[in-house]
Image (cartoon, rainbow, N blue to C red; front, side, top):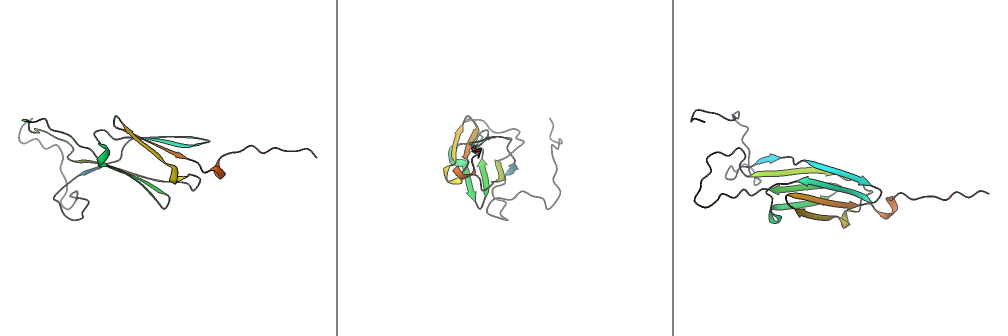
Length: 137
């Protein structure tokens, strides 16, 4: 690669800004993580790929029927080395989902392991499927 190689260009006025607003002090790239969702009669299980995200840089919020995943990856640079080429600076993961009122958001279980977030969201008891006995009479 030579000094004149341009990997990506950005039109004027399309800068990525920090969470604090118009301040360009800390730029980040927003990435929608890959997500798998499985549903059964007990609820849903969601797996989100969040490589490089430590526990202290992960936030999961539920408000007004919306589930938000907000995370920032930490890419360590070994001591004595400097980054020669980086395609993503301060990778920031964000994804939002709308939840049905059938789910009990007060009982969400969240686990982060090996870069994968697992969310288990149970159904409310009254929303679970049930068998209704039919009598002959």
